[in-house]
Length: 113
Length: 115
Image 1: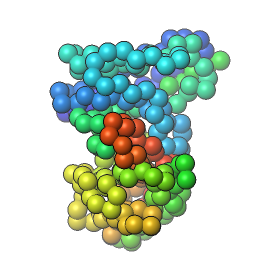
Image 2: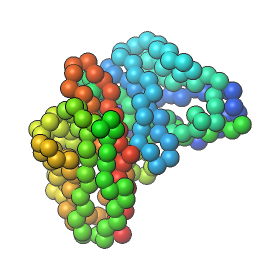
Image 3: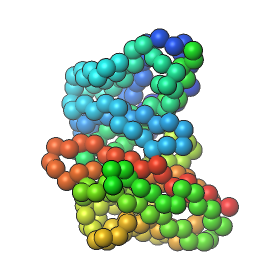
């Protein structure tokens, strides 16, 4: 069983829709949770970072962590065609600055006009 | 520089040949990470460095893979006697030295194709 599970999609939504992306994990030691966006043939780019449980909002993006359920989510409001990319959840037991990240498989998102 | 630089962008090797990939971390960053991305999405951690010292090598296939980060030189990842399953995109990431900095900045990757 993988430590981090993420539905690979693809997920196709119309422009303006609210998108919900999710990951589950099995390692209760994970405390740092990240969402990366990866455009085709590019490196991952950090979108959101959360420590422990709770919510975090940044513009159109909201990240949620529920450690009791070992479940994390990323919500994208008013989705745009430019949001079309692969979204990767990542997590680590210690600070993500110097500890290895464990990634989900990534969810491919397509936002159509 | 302000971006992680990786060279070459693409590398093609015949099975059994050696491959060497390079990474220049962001200036001032002291942690360097190597990840392997196979089948488009599956990221696998290989090794990390704190300056020139190995920090975590738990993901490294020891028999054919080696890596170095030497002072005043790009970091390198070398694969001896490449195999078909080594075909992947190899990403380098770096992060600053300060405690509490939780971001890894990724480079654009090197695509290795083993024929």
